[in-house]
Length: 316
Image (cartoon, rainbow, N blue to C red; front, top):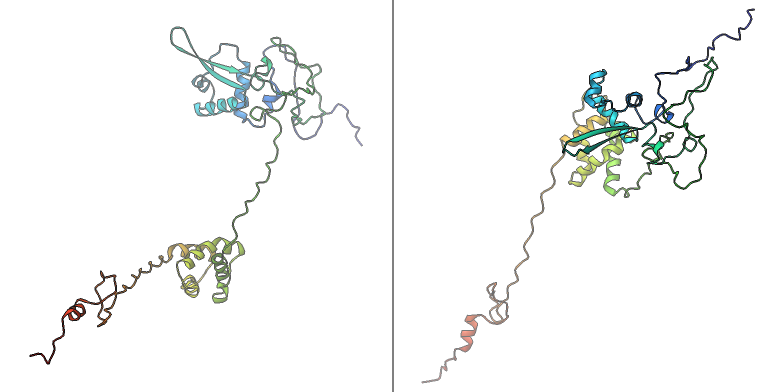
């Protein structure tokens, strides 16, 4: 049996670091940026590149696209990601001569935390997902500090009231979205229930029209429209089951097509019947008056006859 070598490299899976201590040509990158869960790898790489450049460098979109293989569109998208998460800011200043000067500000933490302009919670208040570690050999010694800035204080919980995480710049761990509550719709009407019963009963008329429950619920509104237009349920069944193909593989799809293609037109509106005209009758001869007469009485002939004096037959 071979003896175990204590200095043998670890065979554990995952990332293994083989680092050397850097003393020149290095840049310190915050884990807030390097491990940001909301940024793409292109945006993180662009931010690291901007942090490594000296002040005054030209970092326009065209200049970056001309130096690296990414297109102007990808560079623009990466800059917008960094702006949205507070790692980049592009401002314009008007010079005394009237010209416009563009300035790009790169932040190593969201929205200039080192300057205190926009206060964000310390690292301890925003737990980050720890990177996997490996028991393999690491280079000794602490990481070098950036000579151009003060060492960061030991992050700890600050009970101050202004340390609530900002939802726009806080790169905290993602949480599962809360389930969307279902809205309680109005109760189904009698037409929908009749349509469901009609579709469920098609298999009694045609065995190949066996539908799943979800297909019945999906097609029921279309059948309800047919019934709402005055179609007889028996006629609807005959129309939907007529001339079926010999090899019917998708009855629900065939019904969906027929419900749209063979939709009957709405019934024409019933003609409005005019109310009967009530005509008055003469009180003597009972002949009808013209429609314009609204006062009961006697007609002209009856009134003339009544006003004419009767002749005496014995008169000389």
